[in-house]
Image 1: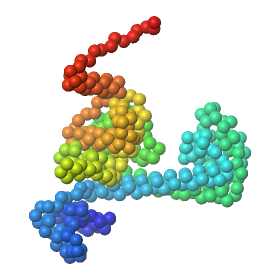
Image 2: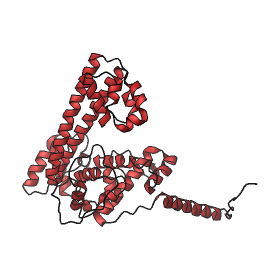
Image 3: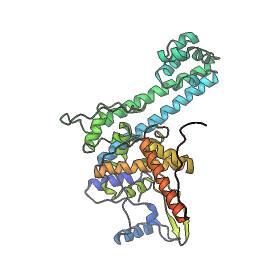
Image 4: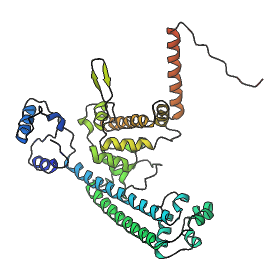
Length: 381
């Protein structure tokens, strides 16, 4: 029975001994009220399993679990480093320095250079702006100079220095995790043909692993999952770290999306139908984060799907629906070997227009009416 992380050591020992171990959800082993003892629970669970009433939960293989542990630890370090950036911003605010209002990120090259110079003792705004990138100096040099006029309190400069030290520490831990992740991944096969060059940018938190995209395609049987919209090499690596490369354990894409928590739940009793709030596991959360990158896309059909649904149902519902589509495509590529072909936003909008037109024709036919097209106006009166 899955309870926190306490089942993991026993699971590993039994698995290494060659036993067929099954991890089940605790909800399936509930006994009648008033009979809650450890012995009664174990006997009831054995009885249910003897009659085939327990369904095994998904547990990735041992090598994938090892990769998963490194990736989750790395994600914790990334989150902690983000907290250090927030502490830096707080120190700037206390000194009335509005640098974070005029540059895009304090964690960038310019922001870090200015912060380190302030901790080292530099106070001149003109000298500090000279440390920024040439694009910043060209477009908003005066705005940065005005933002760097602060009170320079010693206690807040000390806090800024502490945040910088913590940020450097977590960057070192992240780099160590990248080295360990590289040792878990299989070596690159030089005999494989090179993949087409990708125009997608790598994220600021992506691991620094050489030829990561080619290695991931090699693990997936030659399938380049970065062709899917919103999936970067780091995103594919995180998904593989959660579900592995064998998705045939889910018979259909509906099983897979239901397991991620992205499919709508059902609670029907007679004529009553209630919605079910289901939590998303880590895989579902990853797909939701990836779906956010398509919200403002201009030429991707899935972006048009999100905006059309968000106008009717809201952003949260649209994000979940879009994440489910990404999860379904991920399963199709991994199991069936389908190739994702981007149709484009214009073709998607034309398809939606034809669907709405057909629905209007059916409604007019039911009401005994007929749709008459209106000629387009070519000029003004």
